[in-house]
Amino acid sequence: MDLLNANQIPATPASDKFDPKAANRAKFELELEFLQALANPFYLHSLAQQNYLEQPSFINFLEYLLYFKEKDYARFVHYPHALHHLELLQHSSFRSKMKKDEFFREFLHQKQFDHWRTWRELLNDPPG
Image 1 (cartoon, rainbow, N blue to C red):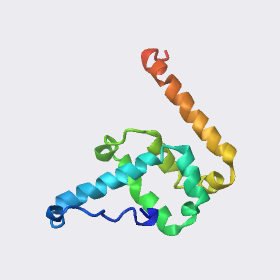
Image 2: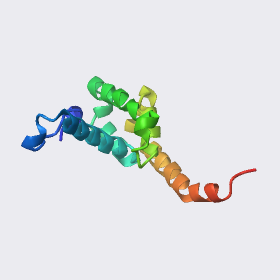
Image 3: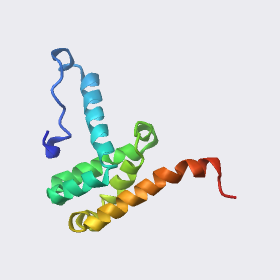
Image 4: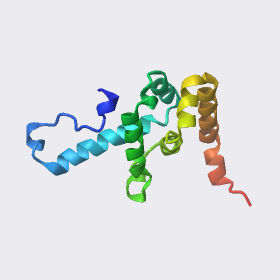
């Protein structure tokens, strides 16, 4: 699938073609799947290397996806780092750094790993 056309509705069964509710659901699921892929620093780096993060239409799509930060939509997101990375992708400095600096990708990956490794400890032993 062409990433620039990710906001287009995928082909649906004939019975769904005239069902706006089913079409909206398919679109939502596609956008959610793409958003969750943004949790992966290696995927972000790949997008940067392919120059997607420099294309205005793609940047606009990333801005559009910010609706997932709203309470009604955030509850569907399984990988919270996706929302954090989506927020970072709104900044041109982050987008350019992802393209130029492999060490930055590794840094993001390590920070993410450290969070996942320790988050249960924080839940079981709150500060204070």
